[in-house]
Length: 206
Length: 310
Image 1: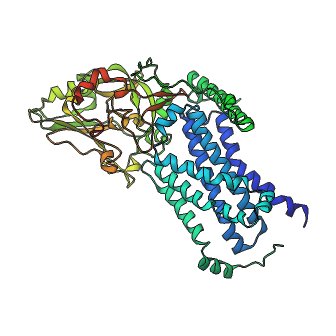
Image 2: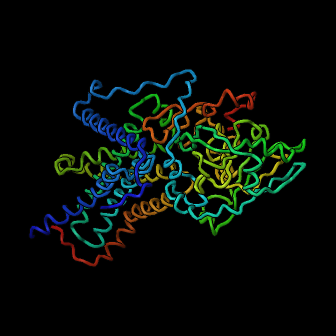
Image 3: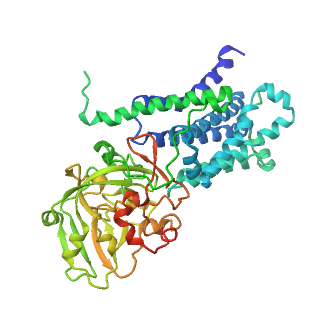
């Protein structure tokens, strides 16, 4: 394997995943956000997080379909970045918006179903992100897979959160819900056999 | 040398508030890092002071910058994006414009907008403006009390409500082609609310004629109610005996009521109604009952259960 093949995909995937953050930082620094910048940051980090989760979930079926090794890397990286953007989204909410004011947070957030769903999604993602290293994969052995199934409830909770925070226009949450449900269905044995049959490229893995 | 369009220059106030915002962001990031590193309570940034338990004093009314007022608008007839409205509305035709005032009145009339302005010369009123989405502004409106217009048409004794209707013109208002709400937008007030001194028909902001994104040429302003009650670009005012249907209450009756008084005691499933983000100011502040106008308007609702009639 030459160096380009080895280092190309991780470098490109990392850069792609950091692009929304760089763009946001650029807009903050140059004052390109609206007059309600906290809201803009909240919306943009949230959208990026759910996009990353969808990309991560797409990794496995696409890999099975196409067989490119970098798709497996994409699954892991997009998942990690999804957690990262979700964490920024959460920190912007409790830190920048609410300045860690527990009285305000209690009054405003704790009884809102959208907030509970979002927090639950983040909590599901936390152990997945922590155990994403090879070391943890080795240590957990078979159990590692079970832990990583948490990404499914996380994705469903995240899109529910997206739905529940929408004012009236739910077109974007609908798109993400459709994508997530499709990607979860593709994991069922019936659809797995179908995609395996479609594979056009020999598996270059290992 | 690149020429800078004057409209691109950030108003001083917003510029400095961005600075404080960035500084605030730095504190938060540092706080998060510290929390991460030690996980002890002592390193957490001190929490902001708790909201006072008693009804807090309304803070002084420092008007929001004109730039903010004309660039951040909820006006779904043009766009669902608050920042997208201004551009789409810039060619909106507000002349000729007439307003039909009728229903249960003794002297129904159709006013040309110029005649309205002549008959009821506008004066400045600085009001807090609280959006149901949890942000707020302070807006120096120019306008006249709605009561003067209503008195001119002489409501009949059985008139109990006032219904307002926005222009229906999908060619000029692209959002009215389908979209998420039933068009035309309609709103309503009880007659005593409509006759209240604070209830304004606005025709200007900061001494300038009101721009399309803010509801040109004529909009309602009811400062103790959430912003969506303050219907824009009005073409029809009708006095009725029955409570008129209102657009948001039709779209989501569990979330938006007919009254829609600003009330930190009535929760919303999505947005905070107990605190708000004042545009141009980056820290939250408590939302006041009736948006700080309780002294003037609370008597209108005496004996009513405001958690039921939200």
